[in-house]
Image (tube, rainbow, N blue to C red; front, side, top):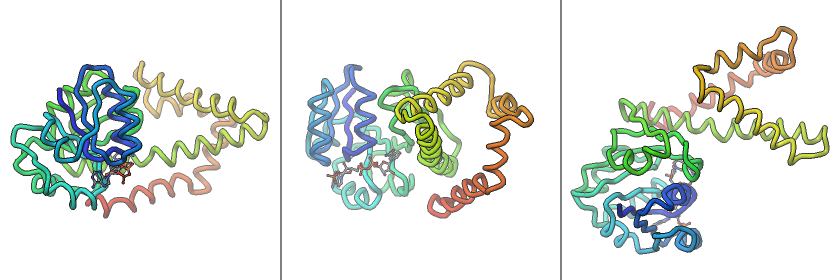
Length: 250
Ligand SMILES: NC(=O)c1ccc[n+]([C@@H]2O[C@H](COP(=O)([O-])OP(=O)(O)OC[C@H]3O[C@@H](n4cnc5c(N)ncnc54)[C@H](OP(=O)(O)O)[C@@H]3O)[C@@H](O)[C@H]2O)c1
């Protein structure tokens, strides 16, 4: 397939790496020049081109710009009715995409995260997209959500990533301070959570089941969990998610 990327930043680079080695022709736009050159050097079949050439030469176009830039750049690009357009952008509605990418009508919105570079990542999409499923359905978990509002709620859900990773990092740094081996401490904390997530992926265990297994009365896990709840960490997380709702139209 001929796949184009408009905007060659963090998330486009992760997607291109995720598509590497599958026989696709991949065209990335010349911004960011450094990332584009790196991808062209690293990924077989990847080339760099101007935005208009990327759109003209692609069966599927991924839009990986920030919203303000998208509103400026997209109207002048030569979209076609016979190509699929997939936006990964927050803050650009489906209605706006239809106007910005006319005459294309096969337009979907999804939320990749950097783990798409190695596969196994979650890809909610609205509306269902044959093109996204064809490209990532074998390597990642592509699932259609019922509405644009549901997709936007998943954008908020995806924002759990940085705060929860930062919490794990804080815990790992504390452990490293005790042991004197910060690298091993980070590996330990990451490994503990990888183990729980693998358990969830390969059994019918859910979060409740994992927490029950960690709820020994007087146990260390129960003590630390109660401390976090009492000091308001959980409320702060929910308040932070609630604060995202106006921006996401929720
Ligand atoms: N990062 C994530 O994990 C993630 C996850 C889901 C969704 N998203 C969404 O993906 C979009 C991009 O995020 P990002 O993190 O990849 O941002 P980013 O790294 O800043 O990438 C934005 C890209 O747009 C390029 N650009 C700027 N002006 C341009 C123009 N006129 N023509 C073509 N390209 C232009 C930038 O190039 P220069 O560097 O040369 O300016 C850069 O390559 C955002 O809408 C974000 O909401 C990101």
